[in-house]
Amino acid sequence: MQLYARRRLTNWLVIGLSVLATGFGLLWLVLVLSTLLINGIGAIGPSLFTEMTPPPGSSGGLLNAIAGSLAMTAIATLVGTPTGILAGTFLAEYSRGSRFGEVVRFVNDILLSAPSIIIGLFVYEAMVVRMGHFSAWAGAMALAIITVPVVVRTTEDMLRLVPTALREAAAALGAPKWKVIVMVTYRAAAQGMMTGMLLAVARISGETAPLLFTALNNQFWSSDLNGPMANLPVVIFQFAMSPYADWQVLAWGGALLITATILVLNITARVLAAWSSFKQ
Amino acid sequence: MSAARHGAFGDMAFHTLTFVFALLVLVVLGGVILSLISGALPALEHFGFGFLVAEAWNPVTEKFGALAPIYGTLVTSAIAMLIGIPVAFGVALFITELCPNWLKRPLSTMIELLAAIPSIIYGIWGLFVLAPFVQEHIEPFLIGTLGAVPGIGMLFAGPPLGIGVLTAGFILAVMVLPFISSIMRDVFETVPAVLRESTYALGATTAEVVWQVVLPYARVGVFGGILLGLGRALGETMAVTFVIGNSHHIHVSILQPGTTISAALANEFTEAVGDLYLSSLIALGLILFVITFIVLALAKLLLIRLERQAGG
Image 1 (cartoon, helix red, strand yellow):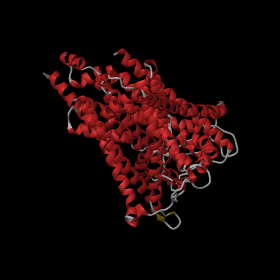
Image 2 (cartoon, chains in turn blue, red):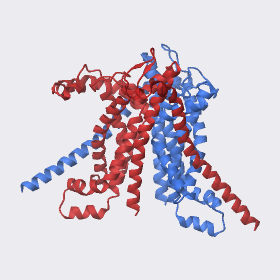
Image 3 (cartoon, each protein chain N blue to C red):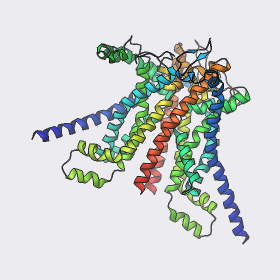
Image 4 (cartoon, helix red, strand yellow):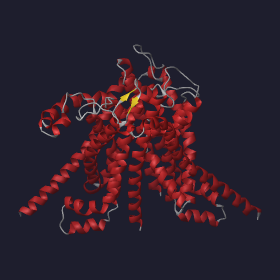
């Protein structure tokens, strides 16, 4: 009887700790999001989107930073997504069982988790040093390099989910392999690949470390991609670390803006993924 | 005939195109390695092996050593793992074994959203919310209790600053939690239901099933997941930069400020004057890259082995 009691006690203890751990995890999500909302909501207003980043002690907004972030994210997505899709296509369609494919997959997974600050250093060495100055191009390139492994991974996974029968049917109609891939397999996997792209955009819209060494920052409006450009993450970093209250408020506003964007992107991606798997 | 040849050409072109882009992935890794080595070379030549074991970090006299950032990186990651692994295990256990089916998906999503929140958000939150809380409530408590214990007491010595190694490690724990728990959840789900059910049928409790069936079956994957989380913790930058205090001195006490490789880079890189200073920072980056590469490669190899096991 004592043995039973002890086993039951252990069981309840384990279950209790497990529930506690889950609560602990959720607590952080709630805590971080609620503080963001409380501190950031005051900064959200028309001036945030219409005025430039101010010098300390005066009011302003984040227009130049928002525009810079959008520009660099857009370029990075335009460069990184096709690259990732083509490489992912190779892995899923052309490399079954090949040694080369295995190596690429392995390296891609390492790049997927590699510290983003290292990518920043690489682009600094490869572009900033050669060009002699910081630039939005370099920032966009660093972000593109971070997008690629995410897109490669999801493209490969999604293409592998497409039933072989579909490919065989198209091939039996006489379509060459490239046509099968582009016109049949891609279409079947489109939603999943879209999910990958959204997740990649979400990932790079908050990246700060690689931008510190590449795009740097710019207090003024700039449409020159060849020079330093303001961007939200670096502005948040600089403003939050500053002793000025105005700047800190703007940093919270920017933080709320980024997090809201990322959460929306993530949830959209998940809904899309759930929907496409439901359809299959 | 000409149509067939046309198709053959298209096939070859498309195959080559995708091959080139796949090759590009390898080129990026090669580029990263080469650029880090070439950037780090001046510092490594100047300081030699001593770079790894010297604590000095003085831009004025141009004496640089990597010991303090390496130490900080390892200690903060160790704290993160110490807190993160048990919690991640608890979460994975709850999701796979205990929670009702309808709750599984929303719960997993919410935990994974923790991974979606960018590093800088954890940083600003850590600086303004967590650090003051730690300073007022947690650190005085630790100093009063554990600080008085001989031996480990010196780990908890000094004034409560809020900013320091402990706070950084704690934030890292929250950040790696979703990575570790989602892999643990995935590998727990690879355990055949038959094994679980037959153990329950023998009268085992949930705790016994997890401890004696699920964990032994899934241990390779669990270890892989832990390493993957460790790889993340080692290279995490912005969150740590906000709360670690950026001090190049090694303090025994984890309540004191320190620095990590990535925090030193983020803080000093754009302000570094002089080739030797810059090169020393890049050398730090190289060290970080080597450490994370080894950890991530190990994680990946373990997970690949697991996939083969499950597949065959």
